Length: 322
Picture (tube, rainbow, N blue to C red):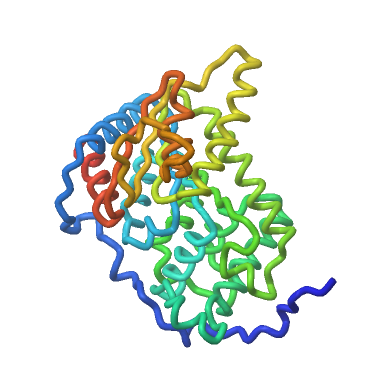
């Protein structure tokens, strides 16, 4: 059987790429934010504060779009304050975080670059992220920790002048678990000749078990899923099942916690699973996060809106109460 030989790829420097997002697009902590009134969001903020005051877990699971809408400083500040106890995300978020920290810009134009195969084939992102993953594999640390260490500590030949807005570097520096949950072929770094799929698999597997460990402490806490339609719900579901399996053997429970799903999509009635003929029946965040996993004692809330509005509003509510 044949396979594509990555050594034939034409890999270009990031200096030749156009970007749709720069560090200037990231909110400052005191920035003026758009008005956003949402009653469930107020309840979620109260549950987060309660968990924070009680020393319980507040898990922040997100897709890359949350960061791309300018929310990095809010997330970092909530980690510094001890509110967010675990950040879980995907490979795309690691890529954007790395690029912003390194060159102050990210987000290529897929439609433009896919035409001739330039899309994703960029040297610095592919090389340095993959080298960090290989080092993480050798030292038996997770994917997220390896990326956070790279950006926070730096490496010879690469600088990070904007590391102050890096979520990964902040998590590493603060000792907050940050886990990356990815599949092979999901991200542009998988295209690069430096990608070691064994190292990627081991380090993201390490992160899965670390995430599951945090979920095992979710009783009385809060799980937030922001913009992840598949990865977030699926990783959370398997982790919760493992955690409950072990807890049941000890005569313990993981049932009394709050979940919240943030999405552009709105659900007319998010607490009804519906029928297999309904389109929303197959929407994993609704089925898994808002219905099935909280039926035995938890509460769930759905927050609809653009992340450039909903996340800053949540941050303001939390800061006002801390």
